[in-house]
Amino acid sequence: MKKKRRDKKYTPRIARIPITKLRDDIALIIHTSIVRLAAGPDLDAYDNLAENINLVGIALEGKPAFSREFALIAGGARAMNQIGELVTAGHTPKPHHIAPIRVAVNTIDAVLGRLDVETLYVAELAAHAAMRQGYEDAKKAIPATNSQ
View 1 (cartoon, rainbow, N blue to C red):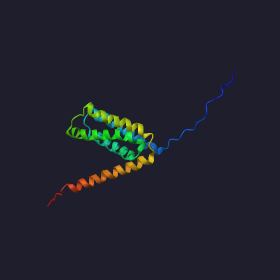
View 2: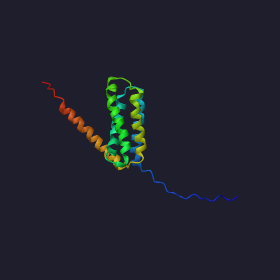
View 3: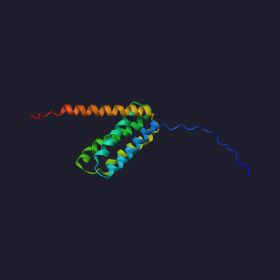
View 4: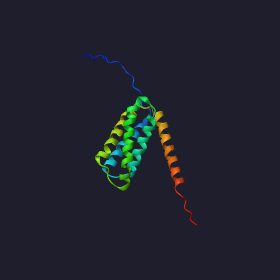
């Protein structure tokens, strides 16, 4: 018996570089956080989700090719702002609160494969710098107490 000849053209695949773990980490965090947030009030899940929505929003900001996706993610960020008080008060967000956030999470999941890792990494650095700046501004706004 003769072996069949392979007629399919060889197409080389792009090697998966270990630095692309950043994409996997973001996807894992947003999906686990949305499930935890839908199950009950969880401040850690809320913070993780908000941080990663902001991170991808920073990465997409000003890119015309991603204007539709940016609008969907911005809608999810606005929904996160609305349920922030619920989660802080210990209330479980309702399904109608979670729906726009799920849209944002699914949009982020779809966009992650199309974004280059450098853009994501720079956005991550910018998001962390913005959070640090926010913490410093909050510390300045709180009056210091003297322990005399």
